[in-house]
Image (tube, rainbow, N blue to C red):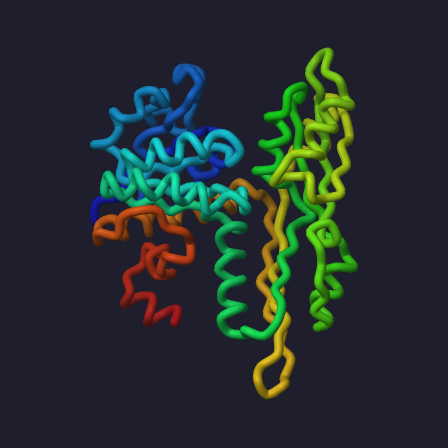
Length: 328
């Protein structure tokens, strides 16, 4: 076997731990370092031999890491860490604030091009796999409508955004598709559905001592890019209830393309996911794109990229010959 691709992970939360586990199923990848903003002595990797480095010292890893997986949150971590790390490493992240992807792309593209690195952003399942299926549906069936529904499931990015609100000690957020909207999308009716008509959001929040519940609720439901466009419910609970009833992280959803071909025939394309644990699945996607980022960089393809720019074969550890023989 050729020399493994050396992987670093920045951020050791749910996604970072998921990436750590996913790498163990990929013999062509090797985890060589964890990077954290915490005191490294307080971080315990699954493999105790894995070095843990503070973010302030991340530049020391440039000669050791082929691809850095950026596993921080999209609201506050990645806008700072993405451009910084792209100036030093090939990176892969799961930036998921859809409305801000163009500006985030630009912020990462410049340092990546300046330093001959490859930065694959917004991988995962949405953005990511769902994005690819939206593109394919529109390309194959240009006359029609595309619908994306998420949940019912726990959103990592939105939960992280909730936890960043002043007065929140802990919390999670569930996205719920409205059954009527899903049924109408599948029926071939091709309705025009607003953001508010397609989904509701439900937050379960543990307050810090002395926090004002009304102020916290208002800060959540009016948050741009996350909650302001949805009917959002905030339920306040205690820490024990959060641990007992909201420890699992299921998610999923469906992309539906409803369209007609030029001869008048109606068609429906669907791509769906049912995920038992959102971070584990997202981490699997991020890790696969690390393989692609390394190969693209080796080929001189520098700058920021999205899943639209990555050939599917680059995600696989198998050779092009194997893929043609077994999967085509």
